[in-house]
Image (cartoon, rainbow, N blue to C red; front, side, top):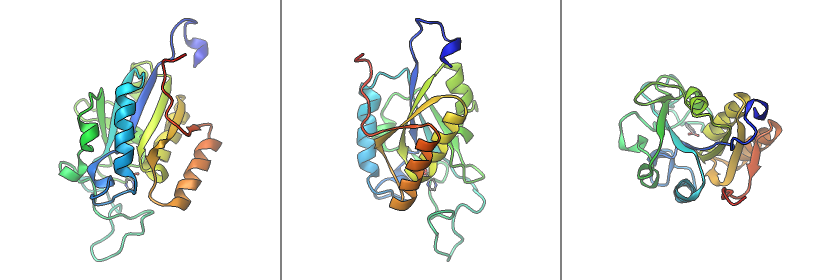
Amino acid sequence: MSDIRKRDEPVRCALLIVDLQRDFCEGGALAVEGGNDVARRVAVLAAEGDYECVVATRDWHVAPAGHFAEEGVAPDYRETWPVHCVAGTSGASLHPLIDELELDAVFDKGHHRAGYSGFEAVEHHTGETLGDWLARHRIDVVDVAGLATDFCVVATALDAVRLGFATRVLEAAVAGVSPDTTAEALQKMTAAGIDVVPEPVVRGSG
Ligand code: VGL
């Protein structure tokens, strides 16, 4: 990427907030432990980090074939889930701390399928894909934060690196559904060349 960039052009970094929605936070239909804490940290990061753009994805289900456990059947929390993030419901809305940020764009996914990766998402007004949007804004680096580490965060980060973005996952600004799949996800991301950074980096200091 850097070879086609003019020598003095600064690196452009986006904060990508994955599925920080009410249903994934404490009190929601599919709460991830630590979700509210993640929202607090991400809100600070979005306000204080030196990002070219801040964008968010939302899980936005209409009829996501097989993703919700059938009525009367317990979800397995790997492939089937309690009903969550139904399009237009309050559970699908962004966490209040994220909702009050000045987001540059919001992308929805999972209308008719599971839709774990944010790169399946389209901008909710224009229909532009996340990948096209980031490319059009000449983004080089994507910092990924949000929920859940072991499902949508890992899928999104792996697609980001595949698409050629330098990709970082901010470990203090993500939380997972379960410890074993979260550990697996962190390993997979590191192996794919994603930089898993323990603390959010405050940029602009050098
Ligand atoms: C997610 C489980 C089910 C996520 C979405 O956003 O990580 N996890 N659906």
